[in-house]
Image (cartoon, rainbow, N blue to C red; front, side, top):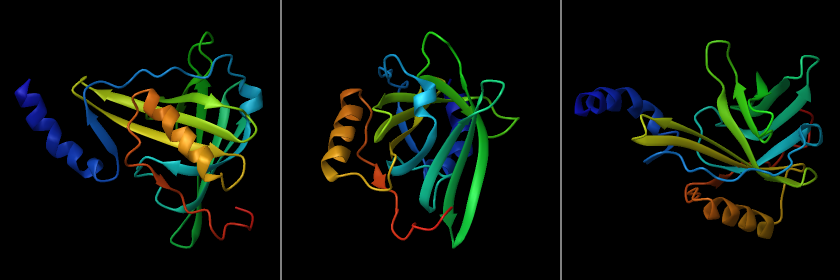
Length: 186
């Protein structure tokens, strides 16, 4: 086992600087009860997040649309170094009994990563969590506070972080996404 850890650490160190990793397995938070995907579709703006190496820009938004095959087209858009960049992926409901536990992939070559909607009112705020165990020794997690508008009141952000914390999700490294000066179409 020590040999595996010694081999994994150098491979994972470059990822650590832009990710949030913690010892032990992923927490298992409750997800949105009676989740309705059709009400969730549309545009969501990123308000705050845990560090993610694939999201370094500003004016970050996610657009969700149902495809004819019942998968979800995911288009993430951000402005990075003055250029608009977009990434398209696919989300699926992995288990119809738990529709708030989606899987998302941005490449044919990668497995679906967890995309769990922990809480949403569909109209103003959504709390999303993703976590991947690595040999149950540690985990890499992501968390997002999303909104239908570019800004949320501070008290809404405070309560969102409280909800994450109640589910044993450490949001101490969460930071705001710059949504200033994003009025033009992306």
